[in-house]
Image (cartoon, rainbow, N blue to C red):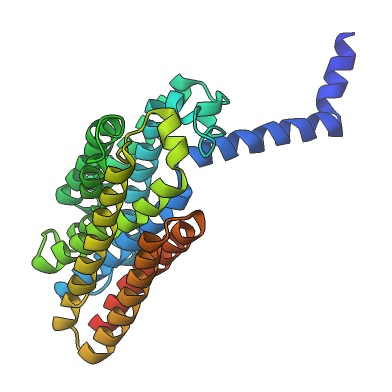
Length: 310
């Protein structure tokens, strides 16, 4: 009877079911934004803003910082969402990504696209209106190169790792531009640090999930065994060595040079140690340790730059 369906709808069990559906829907849309990636993006953007603001000797504007972080977060979330839309069929073939909302079909493709575009547009407009045009342009450039250059290259050439590192290193530039309205050598140093950091970080991921990537048709590593080994050695060791040297550069302008150089050297040598262990014995455990080391290294180095700058 009609009355019975209404009672069921209003009953505690019916309301509980609606809440459960709503929470699952929220969790799916939240997962589209790739929050685990956005965490590091927010850290590097915030530090770029702080250092850019300090370079201009201006009082720190918490409102501007909040708008910068929010705008960058929205654009990054839009990029992550649209990336999952573009790669949904390939993600469905990988164990690591098969449960993603778009890949699993829990959300309609049209809904994913609308959500992603809305996030990206909102972030772009916020940066342009509340911060400055340069920060907004850098965010849009990051979005476009990530989606339309790096993403399709993942199925064509292992050089996609190099190409993807360019937009991947953009967050500190966005933060710096937001705070100062320009880009200096110090800003580009932060960019270079993040650029180099991405190679060992991604090599660890690529090795751990190499079978998944191969199954889905991603060419993030060469298929030939010997070529794959040489590629991973170069993409891991050379950036780590360059990173160890470049990480000393911010100490030249700080007030606590010795403190910074000791800390930066300690972090870089630790990162290099796990990179070498991975290259000597490529296994799931050494790759996982290198991945953890990369996640620990980056925020600590950037915070060390801030501390030494003060």
